[in-house]
Image (cartoon, rainbow, N blue to C red; front, side, top):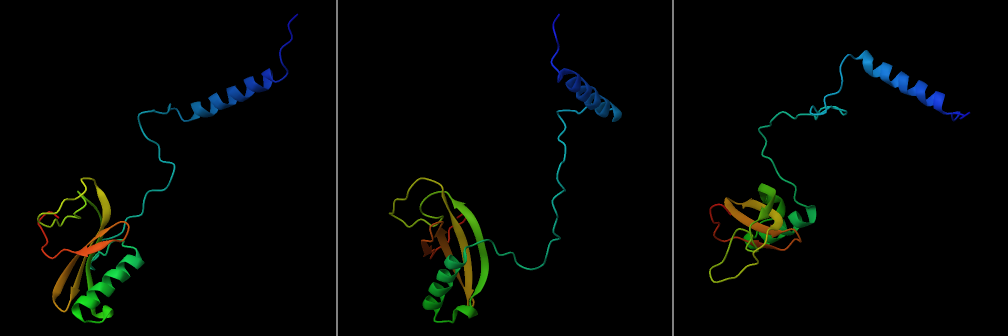
Amino acid sequence: MTRLPRSLPSLVIVTLLLAACAAETGESPDPSRPTRTEPPLETIAPSDEPVIGEVPAEIMDALLADAADRTGLDAVAIEVVQAESVTWNDGSLGCPEPGMFYTQALVDGYHVILEADGEELDYRVSAGGGFRLCEEARPGG
């Protein structure tokens, strides 16, 4: 006579209990419908304040210092108009100079516009922190 393993009755009981719990809902899970297991994301109401993007502090400090040197103003008198993370289409950082050749690869970086005494300074920054002032901003740059 073949003897059944001692754990088999326990396994049968657990299986029956799980089946009974699933049957209580009256529905079988629909694998095509996602189920939410975490709370919904919090939404933030729009503000009238200008949005300043994420630019590392050390890069922003360098840009403000450069703008202060160029304009002769104190860095605290310079206003940040725009500071956003971007991916440039090539090594020109959206501001090619005539006669120059640039790497033809996507370059992560930042686009920062500062205003100093009514003058806008358009900075193009690579992710490594290298920057240059775009003297003649090009559309779509």
